Image (cartoon, rainbow, N blue to C red):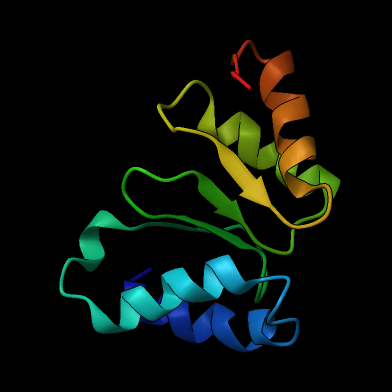
Length: 108
């Protein structure tokens, strides 16, 4: 999915709860306005709002994911190199829960 398509697909769903999704919306804003879009990683994990994104050097930001979706995404990421994961509510905890079961180590 192209960066502009990612933005169009997810933006309205994320804007429904703008405060909760402010980090992802900020990344989408960068996708729309910066030339170096290719450095931003994006993942569509289901319908609108069910996504994740990562700006270079920053943690993965989780969107509106269920526990099962967080676990599936953690499995897909495996032991990839990423500096951390953040998200609203319990999404990051659910991701880390599964990632740790798979042997990924996180530092506090």
